[in-house]
Length: 511
Image (cartoon, rainbow, N blue to C red):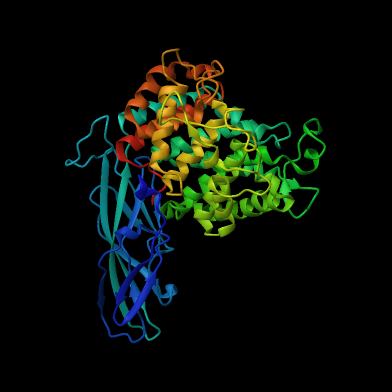
C-alpha cells in the first residue's frame, strides 16, 4: 500500500553536458525513462527534455492530458505537439493549447493477459507516443518523442457491489439531498459536524472506484461551506461560521473549533490526496482545473482554519480529550505532507507522542494493554486522568482510529504493530460478533452496547485483515439501513477496504 502514499522524490536526468534536477510533481516519477531526441539542425543553447507520462482514466469519460507539464524546455512558447501515434484501445486528439484529449474504449476492453476474479482488480493499459517540435529564434527545429501510458481503472465485483449500495443510499435514499442541505446551513447548529459522515463516505468511495463524480460532489460541498464563511470577531481578517448563541457566548462571534475541525480534517485529507495525484490535478474542473481548485482550498484551509484557531489560542488545537486532539493531529499531518511546514508536523508529533502545551500526556502515553485480551489496546478519553478512570468510548474512538490508519499509510509514526493491536481490539473486545451487530460502548469491552452503525472508523481496519472484513460484512451490514447518516460512511469504507485488500492500494492518491 505504501507506494501510493509516498511523496514524490527527485529524479536526476542527464542531457548533453547539462544536468537537470527534476522534481516530478506532475507525473509519476517512477515512470521516467529514456527520451528520444532527433535534431534536424544543430541548435546551440537549446535543450529539451521529454518525460514519459502516466494517467488514470475510467471507462466512462474522456480525460485531458497536459503532457508538457513535466517536460523541460527553454521556452514553451516555441513548443508544439505535432503528432501522436494511434492508441491500441482508445482514441487521442491534439488540442490547440498543446494538451491531448484521451477517450477510453467503448465498450470496455480487457487485456487478454489479465485474469479477473472477485478477489483481483483488472488493470487495462493503453499506450501511445506523442511528438513535439521546438523552434529556435533562428527557425531551427528540434523534435522529440515520449510515451503516454493510460491505466484504465476498472472495478472488481466486490467493489462494484458496495458502489451500487452506496449510490442507491446516497441518491435514491436521499442522503445527497441531506448532505447538500447541511452544507448550506452556515453551521449555525453544528451541521458541519454531522455533514462529516457523508463526506467521509464520499472520500472512501472515490478512492475505491476512481470515479471523479464523487470528487466533484465533495468539492461542491466544500465550496458551499466557504460561501457561508463570515469574518470572525476576534480578528476580522479570518473567516468562520458563527453559531447559535445557545451553544456559548463566544460561539456566535467566532464559531466552534470542534465543529470546524471535525469536518475539515476530511477536507485536509482530500487536499493531500489531490496533491499526491498530479495527473488528476491537470484535468479540467469546470472552466478551470482541479489544480486551481486545490490551490484555492489549500489557501483557505491554511489561513481560515489552521492559522485562525492557532492565533486564537493553543487550547483550540491542543484539546483536553483524545479524540478532539486527534482531529488537529490529523490535519497537522496532512498539511505537513502537502506543504512541508514544520509547524504542522510539530502539532502532529506533540499530540501523537510528544509534549502538548498545558496537557500532561499524549496519545501514545494514554495507550495500555488490555489485561483481558493481551495485545489489544485500551486508553482513557481525557489526557489528565489516572489510567482506567475514564475509558475511551468506542464511538469517539472511531475518529482516532481513522487518524491512526491514515498516519500509518503515510508512514507517519504510527506503525503496522499499532494496526495489528487495533485489529485485535476490534475483533476480540469491541465487536466479538456473538451479540449481534452491536459494538460495546467502551474500547475495553465495558459499558453495555452502543447503537448500531457507530463503529465508523473502526470498520477501516478491515483493509488489514480479510477475515475481519468478512466478519464485519456478515455481522454488520444488515443493520446499515438503520444507521442513519453513518450508512454512507460505512458503505464507502467497505468498498475502499475491498479495493485495498485486492490491490494493496486505492485508486487515489496516485503516488
